[in-house]
Image (cartoon, rainbow, N blue to C red; front, top):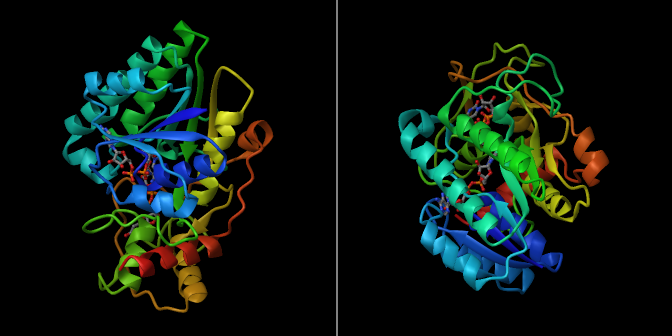
Length: 330
Ligand code: NAD
Ligand code: WQD
C-alpha cells in the first residue's frame, strides 16, 4: 500500500515515515523543505534500509501536486505539511492562512479527482483553546487564540463538510498534544533554526551551550509548582498513532487526541532532563507568555479504545532521546 506523506521531511512526518516503512508501507513524500532538510531522506534510509520517493513540491502548486497523483498509485494520505509557529502566525497571518488552507484544499481536490478517500490529518490540542476542565476529551468545545490554531480549526471544519458531502471519505483527525523526543538512532529529531519557540528545543539549546539561559514563562499558574503543565508525548508514540489510524477498520470521520494523558510542569520537565542526562540547564523565571494557559492534558481513552493506542515512552525516555539527538547533531 502506497501512502502519500505531505511534510514528510519535517519533525513528525519523518518519524512517521520510518514507522510506515518498518510496517511495510511504501511512502511517497511531498515537501517543499521550507522547514526541513533534504538529508532527512538519507537518514530515513539509514534507519530503515528502505527508500522513499520524494517530490520537492509546494502543495500550493496544484498542477505539480496533481502530477504526483497521476504518477503514483496512492491509496492513503497523511497530511503533515503546514506552517506551525504560533507567534509567527500572529505576525504574518495571511501567509499562514494561505499556506495551510490552500495546500489542504489542493490536496483534497486531488484526492477527490483520483478517488483517494483515506486521509489522516495533523490537528492540534490548540483547537481546545483554554479548556474549562481536564483531562480534555474530543467532544470539548473548540476555540482558538491565534491564526495558526484557526487554520487547524478551519481545516477540521472543511474536513467535516467534505465528509458530509461524500461519506465514502475515511478521515481521521489527530489532535496532538506536545510532541518531543527523537528517534533512538539519534539521526532524526527537532532542531529549529534560530531561537526556538517551544520548550524542549529551547532546553536543548541551553543544554548544549547555544543559548545561555532558559526563560520559564511564569511561576504563578494554578498548577503543582506554578509553572505551566502540558501533556508531552514521545514522537515515536505519535508515529505509531498514525499507523494505527491507517489500519483502523472503523470508517467515517473520526477525531482522536494523541497525548499520554499525563501532565508535566515546566520545572518538572527541566529537573527530569537534568537528572537523566546528568547535565545542568540554567533557567530563570520570567513573566508569563501571552496566550499561555495553566494546564493542558488529554484524555486518550478514545484513541486507546478505538485505535488500540497506548503510549510506550516515559518523560525520562523523551528527555534522553531528545538530548541524544542534539548531541549527535551538534
Ligand atoms: P515541521 O515544520 O517539522 O514539518 C512540516 C513540514 O511541512 C516541513 O517539512 C515543511 O517543509 C513542510 N511544508 C510546510 N508547508 C508546505 C507546503 N506548502 N508544501 C509542502 N511542504 C510544506 O512540523 P511538525 O512538528 O513535524 O508538524 C507536522 C504537523 O503537525 C503540522 O501540520 C503541525 O501544525 C502539526 N502539529 C505539530 C505540533 C508540534 O508541536 N510539533 C503539535 C500539533 C500539531
Ligand atoms: C510548553 C510550556 C510554556 C518555552 C505549542 C503550540 C501548540 C502545539 C504545541 C502545534 C508552556 C513553557 C515554553 C520557553 C517556557 N503546536 N515555556 N519557556 O505552548 O503548550 O504548545 O506547541 O500545534 O499549538 O501552542 O508548547 O513548548 O511552547 O510550551 O517556560 O522558552 O513551556 O509557557 O507552559 P505549548 P511550548
